[in-house]
Image 1 (cartoon, rainbow, N blue to C red):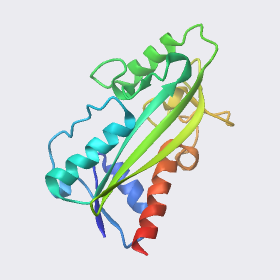
Image 2: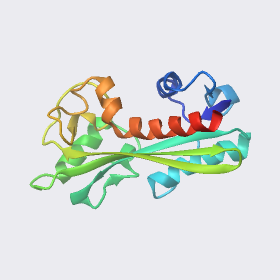
Image 3: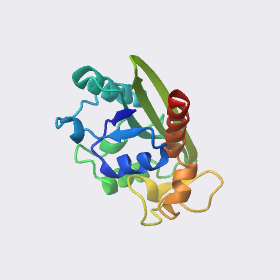
Length: 193
Protein backbone atom coordinates (compact mmCIF):
# COMPACT_ATOMS: atom_id res chain seq x y z
CA UNK A 1 0.00 0.00 0.00
CA UNK A 2 1.20 3.51 -0.87
CA UNK A 3 -0.03 6.46 1.16
CA UNK A 4 0.76 10.18 0.95
CA UNK A 5 1.93 12.06 4.03
CA UNK A 6 0.66 15.62 3.44
CA UNK A 7 3.77 17.41 4.69
CA UNK A 8 6.80 19.11 3.16
CA UNK A 9 8.92 18.06 6.14
CA UNK A 10 11.15 15.26 4.80
CA UNK A 11 12.37 14.40 8.32
CA UNK A 12 8.79 13.69 9.41
CA UNK A 13 8.31 11.45 6.37
CA UNK A 14 11.48 9.43 7.16
CA UNK A 15 10.58 9.21 10.86
CA UNK A 16 7.11 7.78 10.22
CA UNK A 17 8.26 5.49 7.38
CA UNK A 18 10.82 3.90 9.73
CA UNK A 19 8.00 2.92 12.10
CA UNK A 20 5.72 1.37 9.48
CA UNK A 21 5.81 -2.23 8.24
CA UNK A 22 7.43 -2.79 4.82
CA UNK A 23 3.99 -3.34 3.27
CA UNK A 24 3.18 0.37 3.68
CA UNK A 25 5.16 2.94 1.70
CA UNK A 26 4.87 6.66 2.43
CA UNK A 27 5.11 9.05 -0.49
CA UNK A 28 5.62 12.78 -0.08
CA UNK A 29 3.79 15.77 -1.54
CA UNK A 30 6.80 16.27 -3.84
CA UNK A 31 6.40 12.70 -5.12
CA UNK A 32 2.83 13.45 -6.30
CA UNK A 33 3.69 16.87 -7.74
CA UNK A 34 1.92 18.88 -5.04
CA UNK A 35 4.01 22.04 -4.79
CA UNK A 36 1.36 24.52 -3.65
CA UNK A 37 0.83 25.56 -0.03
CA UNK A 38 -2.05 23.52 1.33
CA UNK A 39 -4.53 25.79 3.14
CA UNK A 40 -4.72 25.67 6.95
CA UNK A 41 -7.64 28.00 7.68
CA UNK A 42 -9.63 26.00 10.22
CA UNK A 43 -10.12 27.44 13.73
CA UNK A 44 -9.18 24.04 15.23
CA UNK A 45 -6.20 21.66 15.17
CA UNK A 46 -8.53 18.81 14.14
CA UNK A 47 -9.95 20.94 11.33
CA UNK A 48 -6.53 21.82 9.91
CA UNK A 49 -5.41 18.16 9.85
CA UNK A 50 -8.64 17.19 8.08
CA UNK A 51 -8.39 20.14 5.67
CA UNK A 52 -4.89 19.08 4.57
CA UNK A 53 -5.83 15.40 4.13
CA UNK A 54 -9.02 16.36 2.26
CA UNK A 55 -7.07 18.70 -0.03
CA UNK A 56 -4.73 15.91 -1.17
CA UNK A 57 -7.58 13.39 -1.53
CA UNK A 58 -9.80 15.82 -3.49
CA UNK A 59 -7.10 17.30 -5.73
CA UNK A 60 -4.79 14.34 -6.27
CA UNK A 61 -6.94 11.28 -5.53
CA UNK A 62 -4.51 9.55 -3.17
CA UNK A 63 -5.02 7.84 0.17
CA UNK A 64 -3.24 10.17 2.55
CA UNK A 65 -2.79 11.47 6.06
CA UNK A 66 -1.94 14.87 7.51
CA UNK A 67 -1.14 16.16 10.97
CA UNK A 68 -1.47 19.40 12.89
CA UNK A 69 -0.11 20.23 16.33
CA UNK A 70 -0.79 22.92 18.89
CA UNK A 71 0.25 23.89 22.40
CA UNK A 72 -2.73 24.61 24.68
CA UNK A 73 -2.15 26.58 27.88
CA UNK A 74 -4.91 26.35 30.51
CA UNK A 75 -4.45 29.83 32.04
CA UNK A 76 -4.63 31.39 28.54
CA UNK A 77 -7.90 29.64 27.62
CA UNK A 78 -6.11 27.20 25.30
CA UNK A 79 -3.80 29.69 23.59
CA UNK A 80 -1.77 29.54 21.46
CA UNK A 81 -3.63 26.42 20.22
CA UNK A 82 -4.26 26.36 16.48
CA UNK A 83 -2.10 29.51 16.13
CA UNK A 84 0.94 27.93 17.84
CA UNK A 85 3.29 28.33 14.85
CA UNK A 86 2.14 31.91 14.20
CA UNK A 87 1.57 33.04 17.81
CA UNK A 88 3.94 36.01 17.54
CA UNK A 89 3.28 36.68 13.84
CA UNK A 90 3.27 35.20 10.36
CA UNK A 91 7.06 34.72 10.32
CA UNK A 92 6.61 31.56 12.45
CA UNK A 93 9.61 32.44 14.65
CA UNK A 94 9.99 29.94 17.52
CA UNK A 95 11.96 32.33 19.77
CA UNK A 96 9.40 35.11 19.31
CA UNK A 97 6.57 32.65 20.00
CA UNK A 98 8.21 31.44 23.23
CA UNK A 99 8.96 35.00 24.31
CA UNK A 100 5.34 36.05 23.80
CA UNK A 101 4.04 33.00 25.67
CA UNK A 102 6.37 33.52 28.64
CA UNK A 103 5.41 37.21 28.70
CA UNK A 104 1.69 36.34 28.69
CA UNK A 105 2.25 33.93 31.59
CA UNK A 106 4.31 36.41 33.64
CA UNK A 107 3.02 36.44 37.26
CA UNK A 108 0.60 33.55 36.56
CA UNK A 109 1.02 30.59 38.90
CA UNK A 110 -0.96 28.03 36.87
CA UNK A 111 1.51 26.93 34.17
CA UNK A 112 -0.48 23.82 33.12
CA UNK A 113 -0.36 23.05 29.39
CA UNK A 114 -0.65 20.26 26.88
CA UNK A 115 0.66 19.53 23.43
CA UNK A 116 -1.90 18.02 21.07
CA UNK A 117 -1.27 16.38 17.71
CA UNK A 118 -4.16 15.31 15.50
CA UNK A 119 -3.67 13.06 12.47
CA UNK A 120 -6.41 12.87 9.87
CA UNK A 121 -6.30 9.82 7.60
CA UNK A 122 -8.18 9.47 4.31
CA UNK A 123 -8.32 5.82 3.28
CA UNK A 124 -10.58 4.13 0.73
CA UNK A 125 -13.17 6.91 0.82
CA UNK A 126 -13.35 7.30 4.61
CA UNK A 127 -11.75 9.66 7.13
CA UNK A 128 -10.24 8.56 10.46
CA UNK A 129 -8.79 10.69 13.26
CA UNK A 130 -6.00 9.90 15.75
CA UNK A 131 -5.11 12.20 18.65
CA UNK A 132 -2.00 12.27 20.82
CA UNK A 133 -1.78 14.42 23.94
CA UNK A 134 1.16 15.12 26.24
CA UNK A 135 0.34 16.99 29.44
CA UNK A 136 2.85 19.13 31.26
CA UNK A 137 3.62 22.71 32.17
CA UNK A 138 5.35 25.80 30.84
CA UNK A 139 8.68 26.60 32.51
CA UNK A 140 9.65 30.14 33.49
CA UNK A 141 12.70 30.13 31.21
CA UNK A 142 14.10 28.25 28.22
CA UNK A 143 16.10 25.10 28.95
CA UNK A 144 17.87 22.84 26.45
CA UNK A 145 18.83 23.11 22.81
CA UNK A 146 17.26 20.01 21.27
CA UNK A 147 13.97 19.81 19.41
CA UNK A 148 12.08 22.73 17.93
CA UNK A 149 9.15 25.06 18.53
CA UNK A 150 8.15 25.34 22.18
CA UNK A 151 10.29 22.38 23.32
CA UNK A 152 12.68 24.51 25.49
CA UNK A 153 9.77 25.75 27.68
CA UNK A 154 7.61 22.60 27.85
CA UNK A 155 8.14 20.29 30.83
CA UNK A 156 6.23 17.02 30.35
CA UNK A 157 4.32 15.66 33.34
CA UNK A 158 6.43 13.35 35.52
CA UNK A 159 9.78 14.52 34.08
CA UNK A 160 12.45 16.97 35.25
CA UNK A 161 13.74 17.84 31.75
CA UNK A 162 12.05 19.93 29.07
CA UNK A 163 11.49 18.37 25.64
CA UNK A 164 14.57 20.33 24.50
CA UNK A 165 16.75 18.71 27.18
CA UNK A 166 15.78 15.08 26.60
CA UNK A 167 16.93 12.67 23.89
CA UNK A 168 14.70 12.53 20.81
CA UNK A 169 13.99 8.83 21.48
CA UNK A 170 12.40 9.69 24.85
CA UNK A 171 10.50 12.67 23.45
CA UNK A 172 9.08 10.48 20.67
CA UNK A 173 8.05 7.81 23.18
CA UNK A 174 6.18 10.12 25.59
CA UNK A 175 5.28 12.98 23.25
CA UNK A 176 2.05 13.95 21.53
CA UNK A 177 3.19 13.30 17.96
CA UNK A 178 4.61 9.89 18.82
CA UNK A 179 1.33 8.87 20.48
CA UNK A 180 -0.76 9.96 17.49
CA UNK A 181 1.61 8.30 15.00
CA UNK A 182 1.52 5.04 16.98
CA UNK A 183 -2.30 5.00 16.77
CA UNK A 184 -2.06 5.58 13.01
CA UNK A 185 0.50 2.78 12.63
CA UNK A 186 -1.59 0.33 14.67
CA UNK A 187 -4.61 1.15 12.52
CA UNK A 188 -2.71 0.76 9.22
CA UNK A 189 -1.11 -2.52 10.35
CA UNK A 190 -4.58 -3.89 11.15
CA UNK A 191 -5.94 -2.58 7.86
CA UNK A 192 -3.28 -4.30 5.75
CA UNK A 193 -3.08 -7.60 7.64
